[in-house]
Length: 406
Image (cartoon, rainbow, N blue to C red; front, side, top):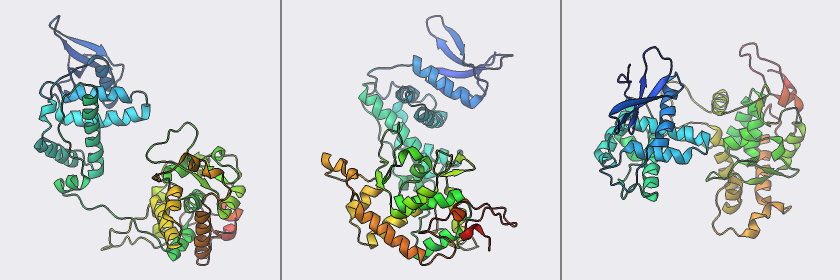
């Protein structure tokens, strides 16, 4: 019998192991009453999945109450924290992965071992051994911080150490380069971007982004059931609102005309070959390169990133330049507005709901249209949206006026 000493992955009093001739991983633990090592099959043959199964097994059996930081292990704090996330499967999996990375390094150490120096060593370990960026490291440390705070709230701990959460400090520790800043596009650059679009799903995504200022996930999640005659509820049924609030936004005249054109058999408004797209980041970046907005040559500046968020933030800046009130722009973006009353919650029923934003978007699109060469932004064109003519050189779908390649 092999008890997993090759990996010695352990959470609390439980560790992974294998049995000679067996295909599955086992959970092992020391039974004090019988003074014997016991085991339980996890019914999982893949090592990484077995780690998650071990975490689920451990949190059902490991419990502690009113312990001081010198007595409670970090692993016990983590498994108790995972118990809270078990209701939400996606959230539980993400938290579990973070906990596994944390436990890989801290092992069986106690909460009292989470000193500032040890945290710095852990940060360096994640950067060097796991090749994680400062933002990812911060997310893992946020899970550790949340687990400790929960332990105090549930009276498992009487006190907890301060966790390093400043991304700038984490970046300094690992000598990470500064964040690449996203650029804000000008009217002429927006026109060039639209002319460079080569695929229908990017065309749809871009028009929705320019007319709704929605976050990327809200656009890719958008279904026809969320669209009313003059409003779009960016928060789909069954999704609980969180800090990334998804508001109800008005349908601009330009977008309304395109939506009437986009009547096909797919529930997702933005789709690729009938399938919902998950992340438009790569396609947006390629389009920006085609438009000449990103210099990929030697010696180019890194301060040129064009991402899906660029469209949202560019429109917000342009609307401000149009004189649209900040409060209206914030409502369109889904930002929390201090002092909002109950009456204002129902403001989307007003025919003039966010009229200043709608007028501002239309004015911006008028200016963009004056600079486009092949993209009829203000004139819905079925050939532009659904063209299937391919360029022989790239085998990409060309989206241009009348669907013709140049």
